[in-house]
Image 1 (cartoon, one colour):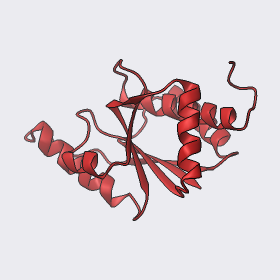
Image 2 (image 1 turned 135 degrees about the horizontal axis):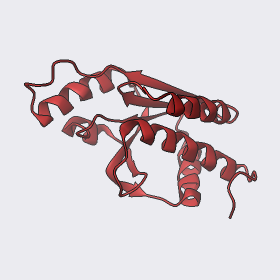
Image 3 (image 1 turned 120 degrees about the horizontal axis):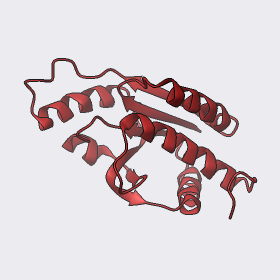
Length: 157
């Protein structure tokens, strides 16, 4: 089992990088996990939102291996409690998903092609967070899910 988080752009804030490093180490105790930042699109001033989403989509698709299960982190996605999120991860594991790619898109969301290719969409909240914060929230929730699945004491029921 391998899980990868693809993110458009880099994490610039040191405190978020520190948190991501900590939770990445924790997640790797359970599954192989990595975060892959993708380059920001350059010279976007003349691009429409759709053009920008399409350009970002091309870069994202180039970084998704054939046969991977794709999960978009999207405001229109399904919301879960932490325990239901753990249940969902367990279902994906039971389905034999060997390579799960979770994607944080750019500031305008995803291209139509990305929505069509996605196997699932999840929302971490109905609130809007910076793309850098979403990364940390997601990795913490992934870690929490894995501890729930293993019935370990991190999550308080």
